[in-house]
Image 1 (cartoon, rainbow, N blue to C red):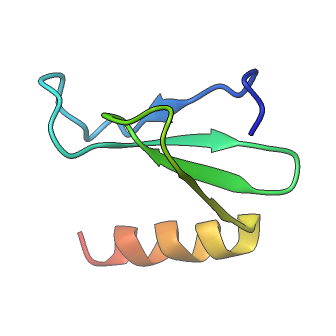
Image 2 (image 1 turned 45 degrees about the vertical axis):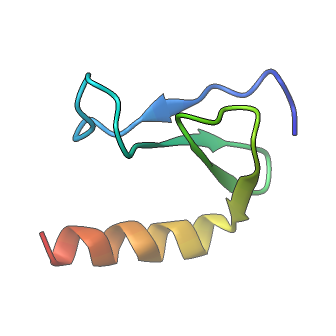
Length: 61
């Protein structure tokens, strides 16, 4: 994947590390990676699939 992606963590992630994921928006997908293994694998989702996931997650908070 491109090294010029801008990765960010959720505002719900604590500052002490732990189990966090980072998200980046690419041209045709939303990428997700483990914040503790930044050079590791990345999952890619279509923008529509990511939007559905976020809407679901917000509905069960």
